[in-house]
Image 1: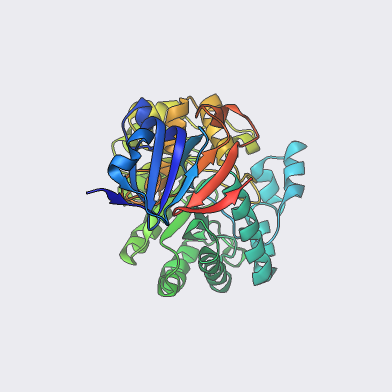
Image 2 (image 1 turned 90 degrees about the horizontal axis):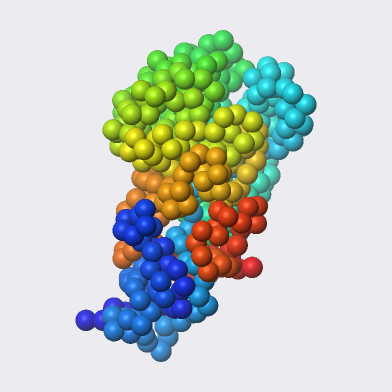
Length: 413
């Protein structure tokens, strides 16, 4: 029996299905076609075989890709788009020689964003988030994780998550909200991080769970923020409360945050600029995804994460932007893919898999997102190029022509 379709993309020069086969898992098909029904991929294969396997009805929308490259939409599994104002003043301070830690000590950093987010209106927070989601869409990103964490009090955190939930229903992308009340110790709890963890566990987490928007919690395990012991206690309690887990780990210092993530069963451990050799092998032997954020290393002039070592060890490695107002004001997954290739030792194929398939795994969406195979969401990008290697090669100018989310055209140049 032939497959019923309501949308068909034909004349695809190169189709990257990411089905795990072909060159480094990209599932490359040439002279291909893609069929969609009810927002899901129902068939991929050679264009000449399309009508053998698929029924083209009078109302089937048929579009030509004109020989272009088609890939799954990017999955950006680590972003911070809920903030009150940008911090270009701190960027200038850093350019003049100040370190991230010195800026934070001078009243900048995360607590600066907290102050401005608490005072921002809901309209400002919503507009900031929508604006940057639209830029991400123009860069081919169709799934976005969105963290709170610039409120650090019950009222503001719930308000930010409420906005994330509202925006998720109004934009074409799939949005995965994450509660990151443990982003920093707020001024009200200065010098009392254990008490703040107690407050999150006993008062804030239950309200976040009751609100029903955030799927994950996240915590910043870092020298001067939360210790591995505090992190482990928070993650264990959050698991008991029904949350999935993510963790900012081993960014500036090797604190052993990766080991905490693996032991807690976290879906992902993110940053890993300072991960130890021991923990590279530990995460490689686990189900925890190693999410690398090379844009942050570039922005902060830090050594790039050890992508090649993680890949060679057998880790599942994802790539994400870390879009945020302080340490990586970057909406572009194509730039991140370029940095992974040019600075972190990835092949082009490995970088594209990490930005799609493994990004989906870092959000628990590996059965729905990141691939163009039967049953997966029809989120894909038509690129204005004929060779997929052009995507990271064309630095600073994404060759995005058209973006589709669940089979619907949502952006075009």
